[in-house]
Amino acid sequence: MTSPDLSFTIAEVRTAHLAFPDTPGYWEQYRRQNEELSATPDLARYEFKPGWQTVYATMVETPLVRVKLANGHIGWGESNTPIAPEIVCVMIDSAIAEMVINREFESPTHLWDFVYDSQRGRGVNSGYWMDALAALDIAVWDALGKRNDLPVAALLDNQPRTNIPVYLSGLRRATLDERITQAKSLDEQGIRGAKIFQSGDIEIALQELDALICGAPNIEQWMVDTLWMCTLDDAITAKRQFGHRNLRFYECPLQPEDLAGHRTLHQADGSPIAIGEHFRTTYQLNDWLTPDPVFDIYQPDIGRTSISDFIRQRDLAYTTNIPVTPHMGNGVSVFQAATLQCAAVSSPELLQEFQGGLSNLLQDASDSGWQLKHGEFILPDRPGLGVSIDENGIEPYIVRR
Image (tube, rainbow, N blue to C red; front, side, top):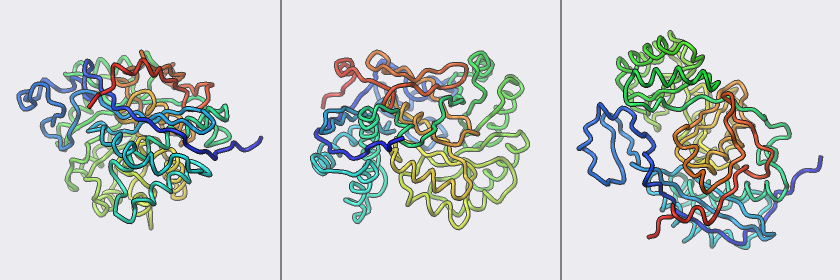
């Protein structure tokens, strides 16, 4: 088989800030019966959920990038940037586009290195700059897949998986009884796992987990994400207790900068620890894997790592025998398709995260070959990411500023 041609020249880059005001936000109505809704002003763009440190958007917003190669092939990219996604658009339109248009690149990795190097000496090695690079990189891979008439996964691996079993990310219902009912219904869809989100109150987390395990015995794998909010002592307790309950993994237990704490936690008994969504680059990841790994499962977010650096991060994790499954965060069809293309070349023993509440937001303006059947996504027989975008169809969602 002839190796695909990954060289390219970019002729045009365009961006769009999309917003979906008539849809619920990322967390929908999850747990709202326990919240002080007055704490979030009417028509506010962002909200803080009581007890949680991370800010969330009250509606889904995302940056979309369109790349046109010199030979005419068009690709689409999207980063995982739910807060102020217009910053990604400004960075691409005002800086990155001028750097990359009409420049010849040997591969998307060459592009990634070029853009990263352009700012690394100034300490710009994370955050929005890397999100912008991720969106651009994904768009280029999409265009190259179309030019080579191959799915992106086939550009990354000679034998990508064609079936990708998933777990549901979040039982997004207001009451525990409703969440138990939702968990029970997953069996009908063939979905074998579910993840719940909890604050740093481990007693409450254990109570809910026990109720769900008892109420929905059909779920084979349970995961818990405490969103970086535990103290080290509480995380050690949680890890031990989750281990007693055969949790598949315990996600984001400590603050994302706390390398020393993660090292101590990793040495404690209990469930496997999964992290990764806050990393942007291989350079950041390296310290967490050497001299010894401080977690058990790696979850890179493709809307932040890009596809190009995801491959390097995946391979680095594999050298330390750490399995890899991509994180599926905030984004619509392009971001989700990019994530699934990478999941097709990731560790087959792990279920892939699936965001049920976000998967159909752009369905009236995009045609995706990705379909969830019997608890599995099937790699579509389409070139690129497997998603086509109706440029007229996205017009109603574009934010004009």
